[in-house]
Amino acid sequence: MPRIIGTDIPNNKRLVIALRYIYGIGPKRSEDICKELGLSPDMKANALSEAEKAKINTLLQTKYVVEGDLRRQVGNDIKRLIAINCYRGMRHRSGLPVRGQRTHTNARTRKGRRKTIAGKKK
Image (cartoon, rainbow, N blue to C red; front, side, top):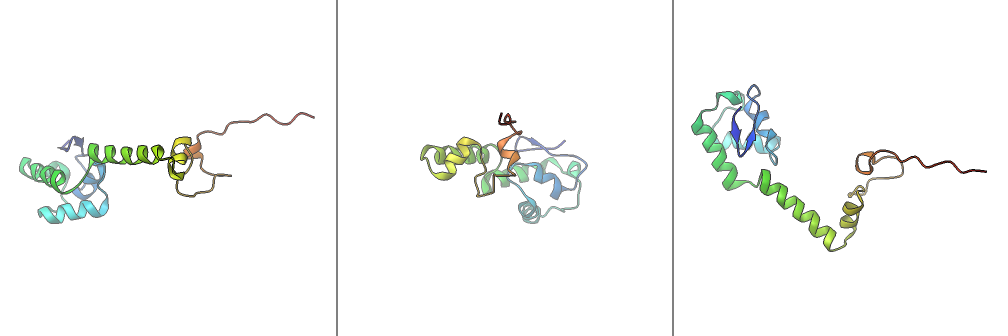
């Protein structure tokens, strides 16, 4: 498995797809990296030479914020929102959806499993 910026990317996938396994790289950015370095997007990741891996590493470190730095940046942004007690920060703190989704029926991903409340006794 080729290792790029501390992440193992899969051998048997095309380079454009394999680069997406790095946190912070999506479809467009992956295509841009291949184009900028002159690599074929259809080549398999295990066909990368050491020089090509080094080129990808240096490009990602200089031009883009990815992996640990990006995770740290996102975490700090969320901590800042919580610290200033804004609406989004309060939603993060209480584990509810942040972007205005309905919570009456859905939002099980954020809220967790249903908590059964005992029925009212007569």
